[in-house]
Length: 113
Image (cartoon, rainbow, N blue to C red; front, side, top):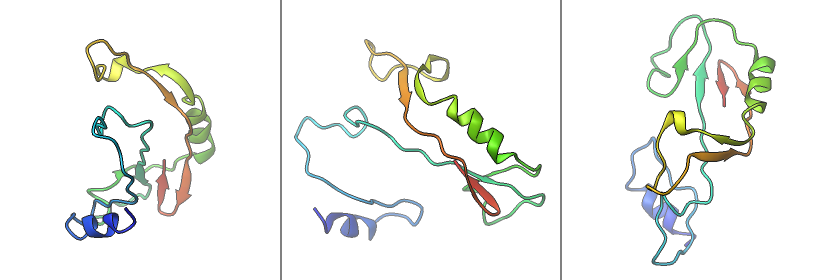
């Protein structure tokens, strides 16, 4: 299993990478069996747009308040009903999800969420 990520990454595009791999049972479904998901969002925070970040970051030219953004992100931590944003994965399911952590990290000229 240690060599599998290296082998897979040779065949994947540059903007996608396998970080780790573990054996799973036949009943495992990559979408429905996942115990958690991790998301990362990038904001390019500069007054002039960048062609280098055009496809990978949201361009916000106005100054951003990282402390206030973190305080707002902290309000998302916990269990919440996200049914406004989508439908359950299964017909008998629900849209309550638990946000375990929100971190707003400056990485000039970007913010990483």
